[in-house]
Image (cartoon, rainbow, N blue to C red; front, side, top):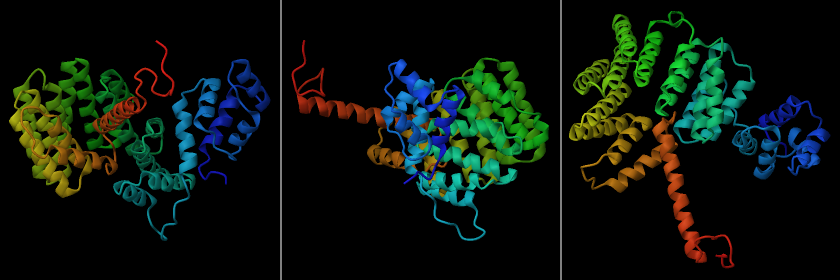
Length: 396
């Protein structure tokens, strides 16, 4: 049965045509380079009659000089995505996909979004669809598809709000990865912020200030952050103002811990006045980070405990994960329920609508621990430490 998702066949055909090769020439070039490739299988893959396995995908990646994991992501989608059940008349596919994500069903969400995107949505919905698509791909462990979707949205001319959000998410990932210069470049390429309204422009400027601070350009950073806070104060958006103030606190935390703590508490007070529970939970996390950087471990743990309780009551899995992860990572205070907290934290990974960088890192930690256990079990079963996959003794 042909796959419902047809992205892989189109990609393989485009890669071959990019080189100007026929099917026969592609197979000839592969064999000339020592890459075994069957023309019949390649034809079936390009026409959607078969989904190549991982060994064949790796060979094709070598032939076309592209990253192998990108082809593997497309092959996974071709095998895993099935047509979504029809929605009732007038139902919103984006809302349905968000509900699937919240319930830990990213595959169903992605199938729903693929169907909606192929239905030629209007430009006003394109941004929403692509943002949720990137979140679903990230939840599925498909980082290239998630980044590619955000980059596509960042260039989308008809979705200014979505373009701002995509650039901000890419920049925040770059900051978390220790790449402030890339973050600043992503933010600096945005169109004139005034075209998108005061609040989005000010939040963009605040994030740019945080990136400049991470670069070491403190004077420029403070100027951007102070200007963003002034604009948001004039706009009267308390939740957005608290976010900009928290970014200011994080930007000066290393050099001026006292000032950073005052700013973090000011941000938290602003979020409380706005009565926005998500904003309050995030500002508690920011306050905990600033206090921990200043050596106030007890205050940081108290803020994390309050953030975890609030996020759980408000059903905010992303914020609850970060609070629990901070508690488990902290030193100095024994946690009698450490194992229960760890299980709760890891269970939340399936329910976070947009996985923050720390959640992605936690998934890598789970995989690394499982690999260590698997290696130890294999060595114990075979009795050989150097060649665990062989039954015969290893040569010394």
